[in-house]
Image (cartoon, rainbow, N blue to C red; front, side):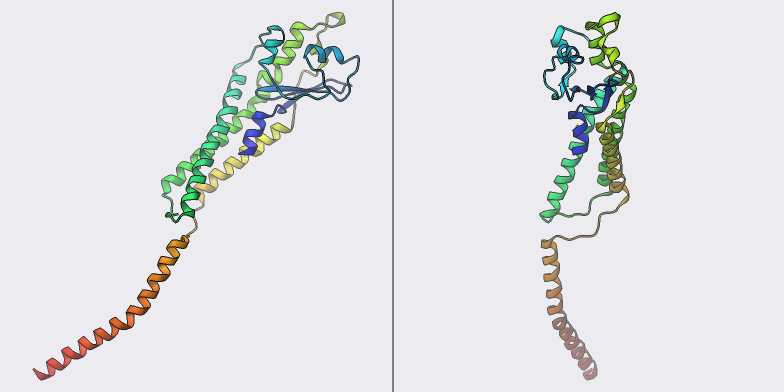
Amino acid sequence: MILSVWPTMNCEMVKFTIPNDDIVLFAGTLAYQVQVEVLTTSNEPLLTNLSVSEPSTECRTYDRLRTIGGFEYETDLWTSHVWAFSIIAPLLGGVVVYILLFMLAKRMYGEPCKRPVGTKWLIGCLLLSTSVCQGLVLMIVDSSICHNNPVLQFLEGNNNTEGGATMADMFNPDCQLAKGYYVQIAATVLWAVAGLCEILIQDPYHTSPHQQEGGKRGKEEQSWAYPQIKSLMSGLSSGLSSKEEEA
């Protein structure tokens, strides 16, 4: 669950670098981050236009670009899908985790722990659906976040440098994978493994302490009653045989 939420809240899914410079533009599904190790006269104008005054800043949403200068960035269909699935996956995963914790609590308080096959299939399918939604977030490499990032659009449309070039031209045009992308892959695989385990592996036989105590007491009662019943049955059989002899 943590691996599912972290990439959505974090802004280090992909990154853009500037050759021979310390500035790195990290981009996530919903936010971006500009990191720079040393402020110099060459990179200061770029950071000033992005309203970055510190060597390392926190994640900032793309909507913040609108507040800087009323800039309206463009997105494609893939970006809309990435935004949607990056929210759906953690929500769906949270629902499944809540259901599993609820069922675990019922087991701890002596409720029957044998779950119907339909319940196992339902939970397994929900886990697999979460894995699919998590995996679809990986489409970020095919979206405009990677190929026409809103931050680069902002730098291209509003900030020119000498010679007619824009500040966006300072960055490499192709994005690179960052650590958040690999966390997404790990979350996708783990959700899928959990779903398959839920469907394919049967629940182990288990009885609660209350049920164990009841079974133990029942066995004790049976061990005490058996000799009594045996002696009673032998008495009845001997009485019937004596009556037959008299007859």
